[in-house]
Length: 108
Image 1: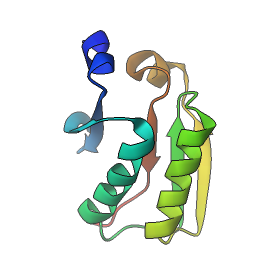
Image 2 (image 1 turned 60 degrees about the vertical axis):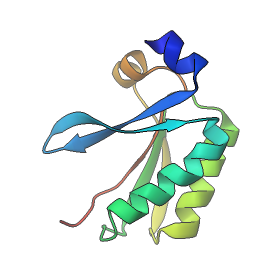
Image 3 (image 1 turned 30 degrees about the vertical axis):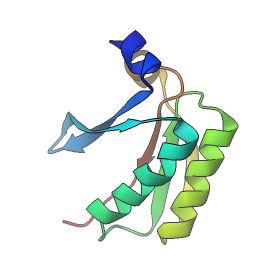
């Protein structure tokens, strides 16, 4: 599955829903291009959110990828602070190197 996903440049979105990780949209293409759409989709899906803090968490993603995510988050969200964190070994082993997520609390 990982080989096919890599070959076709498929990047699945994993979401937290009622304490469970569930599959979401599947993005296709280069990470540098699809990150902008990913962050825009988050803003659309979660228009009401806690503006205190956001985390950009990744598993050893390229600096360019992380910087693109930070810039897009700063452009369309209004967080007081955006903190970059590196995912731990469990997330990295399950999701793979280069995984990136934008994490924040949304208001229901």
